Image 1 (cartoon, one colour):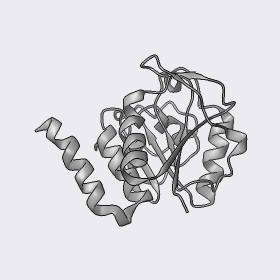
Image 2 (cartoon, rainbow, N blue to C red):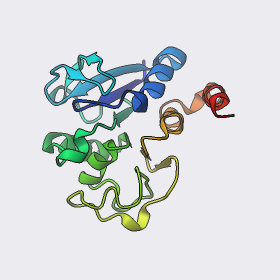
Image 3 (spheres, rainbow, N blue to C red):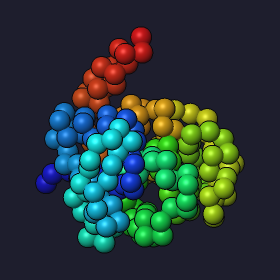
Length: 190
């Protein structure tokens, strides 16, 4: 059975935040990657590209796929996380499904209460403080990426660390491939 990652998006997703994960997962690891949004209406990425989500949120079962990923978007900073997304994340977490958020996407995880009792990170200390219901300040870590209990979080500056942590959740049996991917990207920073 094919493994699947669901990119759960709102308009203006940050291309660089999900790009390393989506590209590596599909091209190198044979993982099916699909996009979803509340209504499946076309989105425009921060890079100006048109993106047509493949599923409406209501079409997803909370248990669908090995991982749901919530990329950042400037819209996460402008308004509270949409209630349907918050509810879907809560239902997925209640079933034990893995969830990942990067940059502003961590606000959706915070709104769903998923970061109140576990180690996590985001863009900077205090970034999540204004999210209604968030009380996880004591569990905040100043790190490139945090993965604990099936929840992955990262700031928008760490898309490669984020991709690596997500792949460890979805395809831990492909340790050599994950290490090769990390080494390939690391060359850019040497």
